[in-house]
Image 1: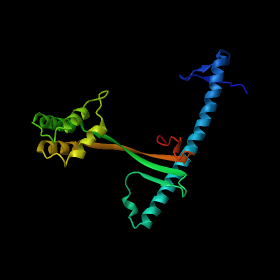
Image 2: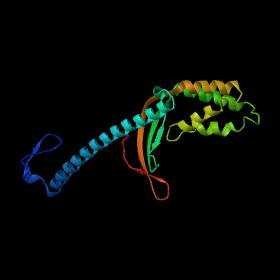
Image 3: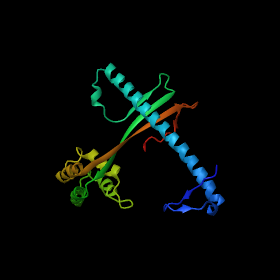
Image 4: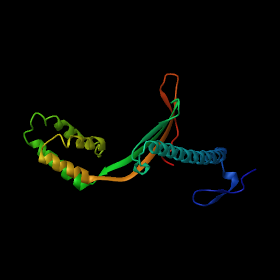
Length: 201
C-alpha cells in the first residue's frame, strides 16, 4: 500500500511525488530494522532477567549449603553446569572517579615523599607513583592510582601514609554496572563467550 502522507523532521507534509525511490527504500528498511531491534531488545531483557534470577538462586544455594549468610554477597560470581561445559559469570564493575581537589592534595603529598632521600626498600615505588599520575587524554589511570594502596602497609613513611588517606577520601563511586556472560566449553577445553550485550539494558 502506498504511503499517503510523508512528514519530514520539521513536521512539514511533503507531496508523495517529491519522494525519491531511495528515500522510499530507506523509509521501508529503517522501520523494518527498527521493529527487529525492538523485538531483539525485549528478548535480551527477558534473558538478562532470567540470568540474574538463576544466578541469584545458585549463589544463595551454595552459600546456604556452606552456612554462609547470603546477605553478605559482594563482588563477582562464577558458576558452572555439573560437567563444567557451561560457565555463567556475573561481574560487577564499579565506576571509580576521584574528587579533583583531594586527589591533587594526595599527589602533592606523594611528590613531597619523592623529594626525600628514599631508602633502598622505598626506591621501587618512585616509578609507580610517577606513572600513576601521568594523564592520558586528560584523565588519570584509575587502576594505576588505586594500585598505590597496595603498598600502604609496606612503606613506613608518614608522607606516604597521609597520601594514601587522601587517596581513599578522594574515591567516588557514582555508579556500577553488572555484566552477565554465558560461556560454552569448546573441544579444546577453552570457553567461548556467547555474545550478549546486557550492560546497556
